Length: 167
Image (cartoon, rainbow, N blue to C red):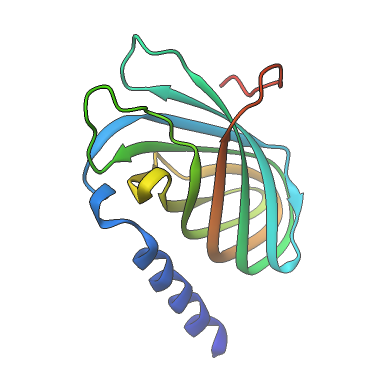
């Protein structure tokens, strides 16, 4: 009885965390990330990702990022490889503005798998709380798990020389 109420509260809080200005803005590009997986801690988890942002402007070079996804909520099991992708929107952009999407994003996560499975993460935040990450489809993952909770996704530029994910 308590679990559905907790999940509903988590979903509501996550939706409220999305910045209103970025919900229907300018499409900046596609962010694709990959993780080797992790062990869940029952009430939360942390996963590291290698990411690539491909700007919508075809003349702009792809940007490598590293990321960490921390989720608090119901999180049981273990996952193997996990592939995520989001369309990146900005509430508004000005010509000449830096296009870095590095920053902290907050929202809701839900996923499940038995051998193979999927899920979705809807996140908002970034620089000046002006970005939204909208899933392009369900994520692909492998393992045995169930997750529902509130997430923080920390996205940073990859240090030079780091191995980056190349989708």
